[in-house]
Length: 349
Ligand SMILES: [Zn+2]
Image (cartoon, rainbow, N blue to C red; front, top):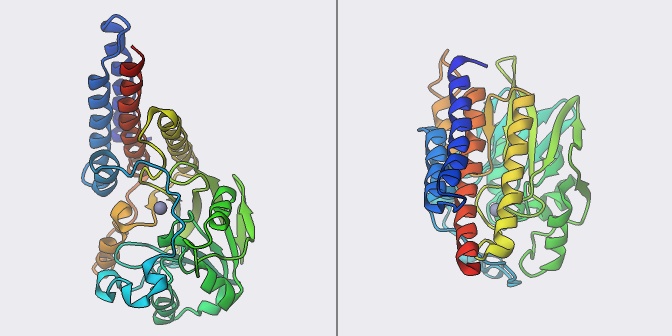
């Protein structure tokens, strides 16, 4: 642990001590506003200039609140002409590490991990752009999409699972997803029309997907969806091994508009972020990847790669910044949870 990191960890610990002190000073009556401000400030301090997108999304923007029970066929499936225009999503593919390739779009990311026995693909974008971005992107980078052996889906939202049925059928790839998200896909046949891979591998906590001597370790991180998956894996940067933590779900996309079950749902989310922070620390992860450029800045970092020269890898932010990422998520969720606790306290007093 370097001294800046130690200072940062110390400050975060002090912030939570202060919260307790505030509660104690007010004679047991909680000062919810002060607690809220402390959580948001802790998130802001952790975000710095590195994780602003994650901070804005989870601390500042309004959240979707209720349960999504719609089972309508999406517009872009009913009528392909309704798919968003190409220039709103197209991005050039990029070789990010020796054995990790970006085959996503401007907003959503797919990552291809190459091994000597084939490719592990993480996420599949939408049905209307997966062919062009994933298969087309791979071909542009000299990879063969027929070599996709595993698809690991971070969670069953249409921006990540969209191409999974197509890729499973076309290339015979094995599909890995969390149990509750497999259930969601089966429960809403219209919502997932053309996007529903046949149930295959059910991810479990600590499961290792190994191909050609390369391993992705899966961590169940329920919150964003009940089946959300995150990962740790390694990559080579010009032959040097680096450790990566991948965060599979970010926004508060669960029921959070009432104290019950909102408080509990936020706790599930917070516990998952604490868990991923620990998994990242255990492997000394220095790179944080996500499935949206909004959170890991993939789109911009890919463009920085071209001008890297002998400089540091733009994705390699170091252990402290990887930890800070999860601190942002935890504290923004905690802030929202405090507001629900306040509502509950006011309702019962
Ligand atoms: Zn999602």
